[in-house]
Length: 303
Length: 199
Image (tube, rainbow over all chains, first blue to last red; front, side, top):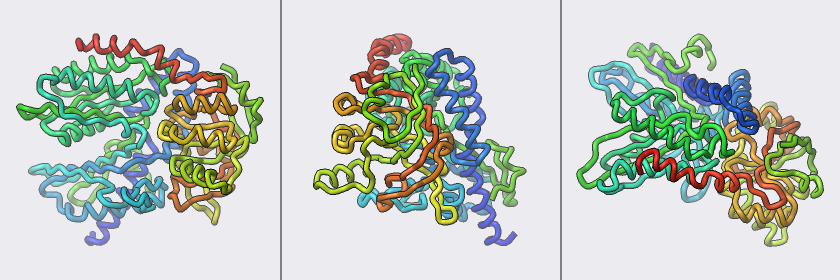
């Protein structure tokens, strides 16, 4: 395939990736919401969860974005050192975002911080945000997109604690954030705690936790145990489904850690609404594309 | 938990019947109005100028839709609520000056809005957050759009809706705020959660 032909193909594949994320909630999240509905006894909570499930069904059937806030668009790119088209990716991701905004369509969510003007196509300075990770001795690229809605992002926190405050301070930050958030984050939520040496490392760790599927535990058993305890504690707070005082507040809590500096204990708490939209695309060195998170779409020539 | 089917314009009497925990399905005209829209509407009202639509007896929706244009007509693709807490700063004055009866959003509103609902006869209701596809299904037609210069999310979209809901009454006109009641009820749970983590 010519360079130009491949660029077009990758762009179309990325539009499809964005469609997958906007329309089809990942299976792990959907399963968790269905389980919450089955278990729910409260009349009001059951009705709200039913609205959520009906919404997912309509979105899939009619290929409509399941939530109108199609978020700040963040691409997490893992790229092999030998992937032949690495230089194409920044252009492909930006142009595909503009195309997807028109085609799917997505809501234009990119606003100038000084003038307040909306760019209209979801492309602007540093948006879509692209997070790069180089994988040594590999020849593929794996791109995960997150559509991060404003309501749940609004409660994000980052603070550099003292080592004396340490882990207990981090756990307290999770509970305080969730108590203050109340109904605003569209619970039931996925909650993530990131810890590291500096503010932005902690925040990056927290975002990474939001990408991990519901129900999947951290490989380190010590951290996995903290996740279990945090999940129980967050649900003890009791805001529940949409802040109604019943049903689950969190579907899961994840913890991701980097090592810290002797003088710092940076923590960040990030929350994902129940509409925790993410999708992954894998590009082989020959340009062949697959969608590990939404493999049912592979047969479908959506674009 | 009583279910009501209402049609805009809604009278003060109809709205004053509603209590927290009730459910409403709404038909008629709904105007979207977010932060920037509230700000501009209040600026116009303060100068004694007219807003492009008359809100008296009507419903506003804290929402910025996904729209597309098909054969020259606007179509709403996805239409779930935005977080209402951001709009708390404007809502008392807006309810007083506009005569709006039903506010639709998500995430809850504060004391000032509750005060306005009680004083002027209005309710704040919540449509399930994130349920954009379900919300769009209730939209029969886009009857117009104003203030597009504010951008698609912040413009006023005039939507004809049918049985839009379920809308949960969170603030009624009797001074009740459901989320405040929940917050009071769960007030001690935070300490219990701390204790579970040995904090």
